[in-house]
Image (tube, rainbow, N blue to C red; front, side, top):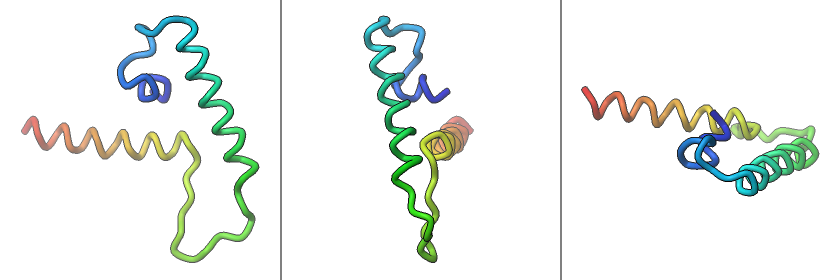
Amino acid sequence: MILDVATRGTMMVVDVEQATRIIDSLASTDYQAQYDRQNVQKKGVFKLNTSDAILAHNKILTQHMRALTQ
């Protein structure tokens, strides 16, 4: 699902070079995010990792689509 979101469609239609760039980009972003986090978390601030943020966004989009189709 994360790869499909990154391609704004489906991963099955992109070429090998573009797929490699997307995967490398996602991997480096997630790797960097793991080391950029601070141990002290401010009150009222909730940090999400990349996959959680994409899944949350996907859930919101799904809810909007359901509301539009009803």
